[in-house]
Length: 528
Image (cartoon, rainbow, N blue to C red; front, side, top):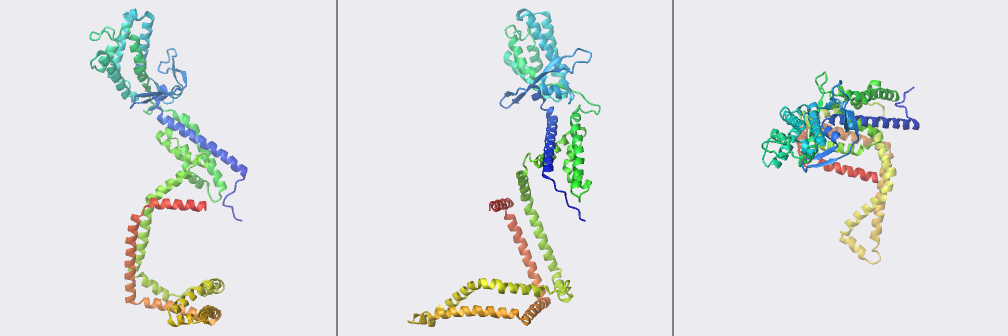
């Protein structure tokens, strides 16, 4: 009893397998999307927080609205009342995964600005700006600004460039107002002053709202992007993405075990381990990269694309074909060159080492081994002869007669006697009839003679003996030292010339053009 190589699937089961393939392919794509989102979240957090796409070259800001929600301010100590802040849904939900919370220093700075606006709004611009409470708040803002510039609270979040932009914005704005170039610390001091000795008219009842609107539109969004990220016990920034990735890892691991076991049961010649090796490209899907090296999780793009292709959700045939062509175009010339040169070198070396004479000696001296008690040469000769005599010759006989007739007429037309006979009245057609008869009799006689000869066993025996003696005599004479050495030298030189000319031709050939021609031939054959 022989085992089947594999068990074929019924149509219904094949459809269920396709649905399962598509489900797992979609889950793999979702997991890959989450991996990419996690790896890019910190660097893209400004966009998820403020929904702004900034093009610095042309100073263009595009706002893409994202859903907002009230989010708990996790920078507030637990013993204090809960504070809610308006924030985008994405940052509100994903900041805890990365251990991100608002930076207390910059958050206090913005709260102080809000407090200033509330105080002025309560007392009015004319009286509020000169009140002791507002002046105390302005003094606090000047001190906080100086601390922010000198201590750089943006450094921990790797956003020192944001602080530089804040300083540049403030220097340019204040410098344009006062008409002189000022430093960052002085610019903040002037901006949050109503009675500065050098620039007493900066914050006035007429300019307060305008300056605060500029601050809220240009400086506040930059300060809001700063954050503090907690550090785990391993000394690395907090990253709880493994909690999101773990269900996918477990699912794909169980699916890998089930799939490879199923393959080993369907293909009887495969063991379970063989099936696992067969599906080696699924390993990145259940490897816990989020606990080891998170960036390596991007290798899941390979099994994800393969699964999407196998599930017929995307088509990679064209990409695969182009990738193979590029690879073949890059190495085809080198591989072909190495193989051909190596073969030629082997043959050339064999000739130079005298292996040709040893081969001829073994051919004439060794005893021939017959494995089936049949003379294959005799049977092959007999079959070819019968094929030519009984099948080929009758069909080509008219063409052979036409060729012979043309040859005979061409020879006779050059004879003055023949031309004279054709010009005589009454017998002009006789030479043509004689030629026709001669050609017909000649071909028929040759055919009958050859047929009769080959049907004679004695003729067949003599023919085989002639072939055998001819080959043996040729080998014997070739073994003569002078002849063999000359032949070997000529063959070695010929192979060297072939090798040189081949390499030169190969260097001049464009492998890409050859592949393009091959592709066109394949397309033409498919159309036909």
